[in-house]
Structure formats: C-alpha cells, structure tokens
Length: 222
Image 1 (cartoon, rainbow, N blue to C red):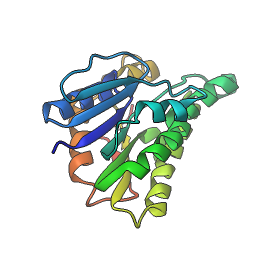
Image 2: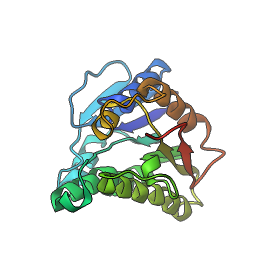
Image 3: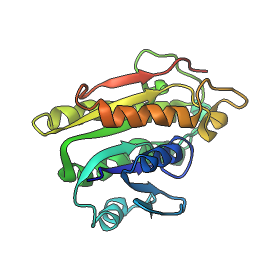
C-alpha cells in the first residue's frame, strides 16, 4: 500500500520539487499551500492559508478524509528582510505565524493520525541553528526558524513513547526565491531539486535513526 505524505509549502521551490519526487515514487501526496496547483493521480492539493485565524479548523476540514499519515514535511516559510529597528509588529508576527505558530496547530491535528514508524520533518534554516553566522536584516526570520527547531526537540520528547519520530533539518543556501530575496544575486551551491531529493531520502529512510535532532544540512551560508 502506498505511503501517505503531507507537504506544507508545496507550491514552489523546495516544496514543489519535493512533491514531484514523492509522486514520481508512487506515494500518496497531499500538498498544502496558498497557491493553487494541479492535482493528479495519487496527488491532492489543498488551498490552505497559514495566516488564517481559523487555520486549525480549516486544516481539520481539509484533512477529514486523511485517516492515517506516514510522513509530514513542514516546509512552509515566510521571510522579512529589514533592519531590526524598522521591523513592524505585523512583519514579525507574520514570520512567526507561518514559520512556527502554524506548525503547532497543524501538528496537533497530524500527530494523532501518525502511523507506526512515521516521521515528521520540520524544515528550518542555518539562520536558526545555534552558534552559526547570523545576518543583518533577518531577525524575525531566523529567530522564528530557531523556535521551529526547538519545537522538534520538544515534540520528540513529549511523544517518545509513540512509534514515530520528529526531526528538524536546518538548510543552508539553496537556490530559491526566498534566498534571492534575502541575498540578491547570490548563487547557491544547491538547487531546490537537489535539496528536495535529500529531504525525501531523509524523511523516508532516516526516521528510524534520528529522533529529536536538529541537523544542519549545509555546505555554505551566504
């Protein structure tokens, strides 16, 4: 029987490529994003706004027919590139809502449906990895991604008696729209497709070896 995977932030960049790879390997894929995408065989795309005040209820409604889940990849992201003193409260809150607060509500719904040997993978950033180089203008983004990494550790501990694992991947430079916004003109060493291949392999094959780990995946940061 095909395994069921949920990908959040599935409409572009790494999430889009990840969805394509899972489909190519005959998984049943549910993609969630604000942008519309075409569905197909074993593929279901759902329009979900992570900024919605009714997010949890919206997700419950969209996932009613998903009884069991094997893999969750939380890849959604929002970035604000602005000097610290110029950040507005709304910009800070939007980064936190999309990057970490929405993960709370989403996972509260997903966790009771996780299959034995399932794996939840939260996609963070090297900017949120403790002890790494930090960059001006990314205070809201990087701190929210650090909170997402901490959430992986906490969930792994709270659900350590359950038969699924929770880990966090902190990505370095990947050629995406978000990287271009943060570092215009910078050429990353990896494409979105290359990183998606790594994430897919980690999600499917490494949950039995890691739990509650924050793992840097980077050859370079700008």
